[in-house]
Picture 1: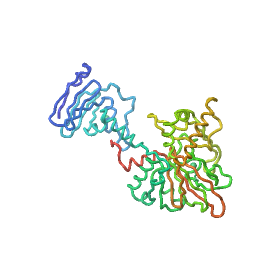
Picture 2: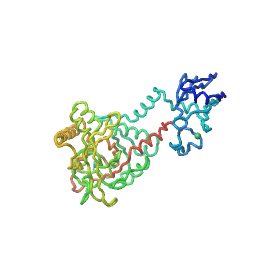
Picture 3: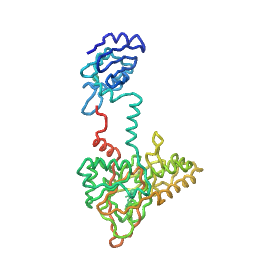
Picture 4: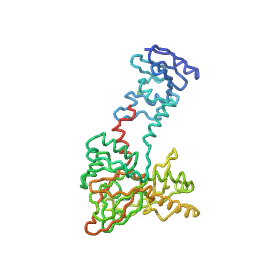
Length: 414
Ligand code: OGA
Ligand code: ZN
Ligand code: ZN
């Protein structure tokens, strides 16, 4: 063990000069004004760790509670200019032990520190991994030929199959599970296999059946234009499940699917004027009514058609002609232009080059990204044999992303 005791004198009076200590094997360190620098001989790396960060992330039992993976330390008790009094390394154990000016002791394992490196290339690598998980493969009508299909029983019984399906869902945004029991309760078992279902004012789940006095167009036998569900929710469901319990024996009842991210890409590349309108001008969506499950509801949002993240990429599509409000809080001069842009988007969505038509059969469940994929339904007749029943449910992406992380165990562990 190397012990440096005069450190305090040096740090308190000397600015950024530093001193170092060599050792034969393992860690060497230098103390800078604000950072500890480690020279890792094994990996030929030099790494700097700010003192405030080291003190903040002390993992002793007074500062950190491992079971909840959370800090006890309050920010008000953290000193921005905190400095070590002494720094020791344990050669054998590859550990750094810091005694702070107030006498508190923090110990850090070499590998723990290196996994949290602030080196540019390591930060870039971690960001790329994070962004890699956000990567999407956009598609047009040709996706029908190799649409990702998985077997319900595999997903229910095997973690690898579950992971493979959820990763496909995140990447392509549209998947089918087949060989599912055509019983309405099967959907709940599937939702529970992943995480918490998302309840909405239409219930914990919803039954898409043509019924008298419908409070939603879905509960009729009419065609439904391409749309995302519930854009009038600020936190709308990330994922939608439609499990076919019974399909009509007559014509109609087919579903339409379009990749909204693909449409966004086309418009961005070819029609900057429409792109500008669809990313900047907010559209109001609303839903007002009542439902046995929830009583009266009145949901309202104001959102652009394409929402962009900090990298300028589309992360949420808000398109639903049925529940677009007639109140428009945009300048008069933009109204006609916005209609033109929306009509262009709608035509592009229905272009057979972009849209998939799929008639679900009993025992199939379609699962799709409700912030990305537009879905629609062809109308059907309610004659003898025309009965159709889809059991629907929702879930947030947080639940699915969490399940993927658990199954991959991909996060850095503390
Ligand atoms: C819905 C919906 C489609 C269908 O319930 O949101 O779009 O096929 N249903 O009935
Ligand atoms: Zn501590
Ligand atoms: Zn819908």
